[in-house]
Image (cartoon, rainbow, N blue to C red):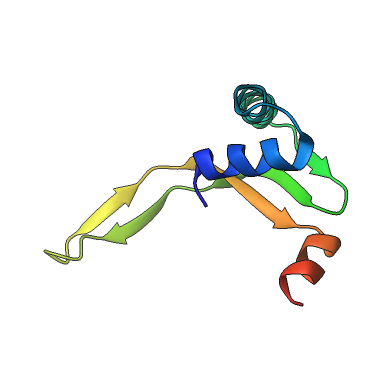
Length: 91
């Protein structure tokens, strides 16, 4: 499912127009991004938790040459499914 298909599904489920559903989805994405950028975590009970993890700098290998390369430290977004979502997926 891509963004356009998600907007269409949201519109049909809620009775909103596709434009309104698109704005709602964009608002959710924006609010989630701002929270994660600040280092907060976003918990939607039953659905899951969005959080930020820090990956330390490390040494890797260039697969083409086998030469050692330095991989910089960075922050990555993480999602952990909630119990209700996990049960739904595993039915």
